[in-house]
Length: 302
Length: 302
Image (cartoon, rainbow over all chains, first blue to last red; front, side, top):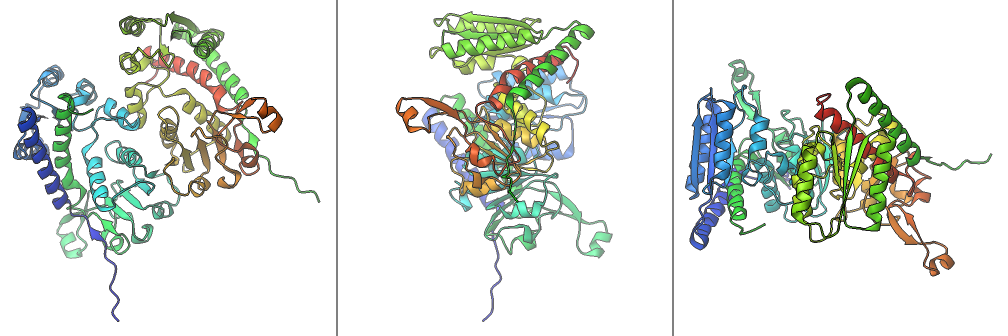
């Protein structure tokens, strides 16, 4: 009798992101029809970093596709702090704008912290202000970072009820590790935060029913670090040389996650690939956050 | 040969609090001598709750004993929101005041959240504003809640270097469990947050080199939940009937922690008693926070 090797179900980011964008578009249509409310997203780009330009264009396109009001402010690299602060103040005050995203990083002469402090936390759809970090840490409603929110959507739709599950988050970055730990706690997981100073990290990872990897070290998490049946969410995006030495010698690179996908998928129940996993959710969650912000600013939910 | 039963070292809150207050008094004297800076604490009490009056009096006395400038504002129970907000604004603007503490709970007609939102986060020596919660959750300098800070002082002085230790926090309250977890993470512990929905809580507790109990359930954590050699910090304060049935029948009560002290002290290396443990640190940390706030507002540290 041939033994069939176990193979984890792959959590396909494209499918999840498309589904979420469709849900957002439906909700936008409903808000228009029922309340005459058109969620509006303003994206602010300073300077001409090519990667940032691509991201900003994509955010604009996707928000328009969802039926939202979309504005992109492209400012020259030499924009002063005062000019940027004046734009943020104007967007804070603009009733047609419910979400404001300032594309980071800003040019070096600008003070990111001051810009984020000035941002209306109720329009902070990237979830980067201290007030939203505080709300999240306090278990209160707020706007939370998009990638961690994307992880949670994937987990809820695969694992189902997360109550009482042991979740281990590897990495404690402000953008991913810390907020994802808070969101897992909000779903009643027993949450462990592991990091570079953790002793016997493999053993800690093996405790996890839900393992979220956000360390930025290519394929660090091996198959035998994973509890059989676990759900594995890989947030890492690491560029490495090709495995094939000839291609590698040509300087060709590819993107891999923090998890050794091939090994892990023999042990886990569900796993996100890299690329093609969580990363694809980010913009869709941004749109969802903008709709949430619009609903709250209009008094339709807390 | 007689076997000596193991007995944990008791972390005496009185000794730690006195030592911390002495350190604060020294620092206050140094700031006066070197910089002409007198740290100032303003305590605001609205209404005439007897327990609050006792706390407020103690905070005033202890801050004066440490050589600090101390002001207590006692407002009548019928104080309006506008009046309270005007006082907070005045204290925010007062250069002689570096710490502002609004004694909670406020009378029911007043909006606590609005008061905390109005408080200058750099004078928020209770660490209750969303901005300070966000800073703590983001690993940034800020002012953090006093009881959790007291737990950390005790741990550092008994356990020493906390790097890589496994810490389990039982309870996820905004005032204790959540901030203490963040502070343990800042000290490079591998931190697990457990709570009412945690499965097999005894087993999770047994993983802990450092166990912090903050659930509010009398003597819930038993001796066999504790890893031999662990440090146990008991933040619970629970009033229960006396064990002696005659005294209990007379309606006499006493205060116990969340940890079964007698059992736990046979297993742990260090343990805080209740009463007489962490609770005694709170006011001393409040004074320390006020000195920290004064130093930062004067530009003497970040």
